[in-house]
Length: 404
Image 1 (cartoon, rainbow, N blue to C red):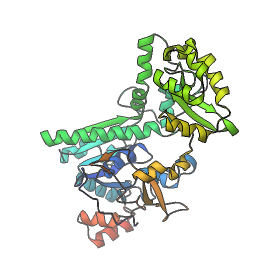
Image 2 (spheres, rainbow, N blue to C red; image 1 turned 180 degrees about the vertical axis):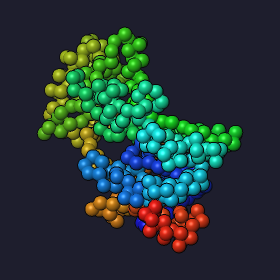
Image 3 (cartoon, rainbow, N blue to C red; image 1 turned 90 degrees about the vertical axis):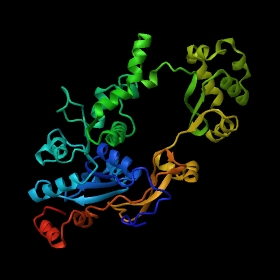
Image 4 (cartoon, helix red, strand yellow; image 1 turned 120 degrees about the vertical axis):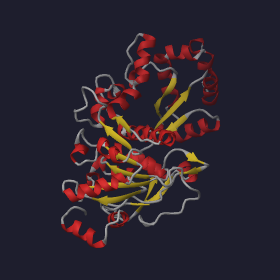
């Protein structure tokens, strides 16, 4: 599949005809753009002429660019050069929605801030993605891990005394999603009032929203929430068990009916009859005695045997999977949860890989990949031509290093 040849969708997508220009990098802003792009918007990613830095990250950052930049076009502009910034402003003024996720006041330097652009286009919707909403912290440098540490999430994820970040860029991704939700709300309001507005989304506030349930737990119980590995579980059987040959599996029984079935299936009649384990709350109080018994009784089963029993009797369970194993997941493959796209950069540039799609359907269809993640500046000349620039003018800008 060519990254410049879109596949024809089965039906018009909900945001078809909407133009979005994004001045973004890393994960948060690009996620917002990806949401709008997957829903059909024309999303134009403005990159520096040397390219978005996430194209070349190593280790845990290697998946950032291909994951969060599909269904977008790329234009390479040098905002530090006056002609490049002028082109960027012209492009931004052609948009319905502008996205950015740079430090406060960065966009002001280039005349790309909301106040400047909205003075010329009152219908413009402008989505800023920041570390913090305006306030005492707004000038701090924020990263996902920073806000997880200061916002209680790392405390809740790790074991007591060992704060641990969540295993994905949870605040960046959700912060971008909240930015997109704000943009969709602003679009509806613009349809009513005819005017755009600025939307702000922030990492720290997103993180605090995620731990809000634990804040209210404290209010309701008077007890501070314990980190998840040490929490008082609301269910007695709700844990990872190490079984035959050291394999691991998550097993649960979250109701009295499920507990009865669990005992019947696994030959635990004595535990089912034991009054100490009669109700869920009884079992929760007796977890220190119950779980060691279960671990001993289940240790002779293989994970596959337990999976088959749980599946047959409709009990909740889960194999312990690694991310790379999900490429072969039968459910994802059968339901179209993975789509082909061409990788734009790195040692596998030009190769086709599977990519995860949004976890919902619209009119019974998944939102697929129409454009693979773009190569740097792949659409520069076409987009500049759409703005009315001649081939000679584009060549002159390129000679001045205003465009890539």
